[in-house]
Image (cartoon, rainbow, N blue to C red; front, side, top):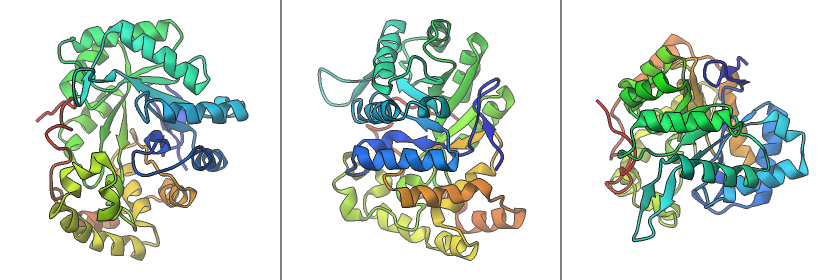
Length: 333
């Protein structure tokens, strides 16, 4: 297994990280015991990068990591932690608002450090851009947090390649996080390439298509209990059934390759560039082990061609976000 670097000058980490949104109830009910079991399994497997955020379960995800660290202090030296700030609940109505001020980012990072039970994180992202604040100013604010010793590096989530260039010119950006998978190929329209050019890690969230690219996608009934997915175009009928059906040939291909469907989806992502770091999330150790199949599996050109034939660009039915969910991420190209 070849490790990957979390940005220029950053730590070498396992090629697959842990997306800790699943430590909250975002994709279904879970608990601290399940989450701690995944962290135990990660340590055993050498998976040493955790990605969380202050808003995941309104602090729950960070709290769970913190209690694990309190119980196992040695884990603090093993794991590299990334967290995020800037998303706020709108006090005047539904939805979220975004605050990119230095004061807010520092205040939220301080709260995250306390919940996670560490003095410094390895990476602090601006979770969503506030378009009223120039990104150069935001990069400068994040740089001040590096100088203060509260984070070792900075990152941005869901930004355009042009924004990345502007931010990187002010302060080195270690990572950009964006949804990227066989079902969401938009980062290939400039973001993957720009990250590679600048030496920035491309951290891919939802790498198994929010369960579509697995052997057991969330059932339509289960989706109805998940507020984000029940309003997501890809999980609404008739798109849901069309997407589940479209992945059947890919599942068959994974079986022919001797892999889980999720493992093959992750292996495809790893093959798209040495700077790409998928961060799948799961609530179950058995699923976590399926995801890790990709770490030691290098796909051949023939295998990559076969994957593209069964899931060509544009196969997914429905936009990746609803109109409301698109508020915040930067569109480009």
